[in-house]
Image 1 (cartoon, rainbow, N blue to C red):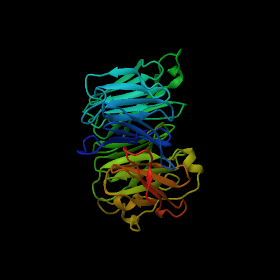
Image 2: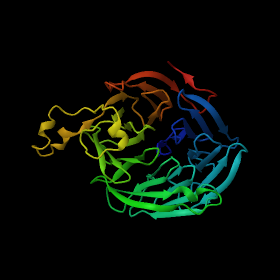
Image 3: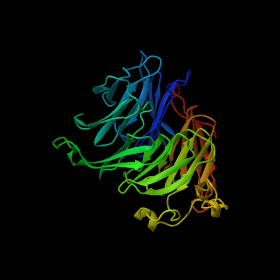
Image 4: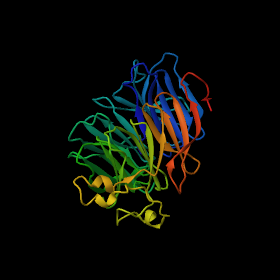
Length: 379
């Protein structure tokens, strides 16, 4: 699941990159001088690695909570070349392998079985155990953000990336049985196209087990959720009226909630447990307690007025205001909590009412800083 934040273009910032790990229990921070690993909830510095001769980390991707990281150089003085993915074993500590490309690396995604690497015009998938090339995909249009996401469960490998046409998402399911050291390479089981939006897709996220896909276009007003198996649209949510840049979309590990952050400074949580608006919901959603997202009181106009779909949209179940800067969000370890990590070094945690929704209540705030040994609590 892609939940990362590239800050390398922010001039003057010592923080180059922030990303949650696969189960959202930790987040990694790439700096101009090294990297940090923080526990997500509660926020706590668990590991730091600095280098006497400096060197920036533009990408730091964790593999759950183990000692293996995939890193890429970045910043003013890159520690490693930006067109190489270095496999870093922090127990040693040193690089144990590298993968080189002809173009700068834009994104890296990892699961227990595979590593996916995006450059602007191509995506490569490698077997985790020995870095054997499993698959590669050519993009029809440049992908400067390295937009892609990867499931984290063990039952199957699901990869999503931009399709060959505007607004389409290519979704490939692989057989993971070949992921072991002695096995054959993972092979494609199913290849589908999700016709997600009329405008270019700018954000996407897979549920932990790969069963659902969330997408947003570059307009950022509508969030759609699809069944990966059938490509059926399960939900359509409205984030707002005005155009926005979606920073992150994150499924709760149970599939009951979806959290979204954008440049409008509000974290939105949507319920995936309702039954309104779709006859083909997942089995889990059908059996869950119904807590529908609010709709406009004028929804009866949705089939009457031009552009009436606005009135029929489902709006967010719960909301939380955050500082006016780039941020990514995840779900906390406590029930019904959301954590937010911001580019200015802010960490926030908020709780929502699972029955009533509406405004969330802030329950924690602190500042994480690459130059200190521990998180400084400011509550």
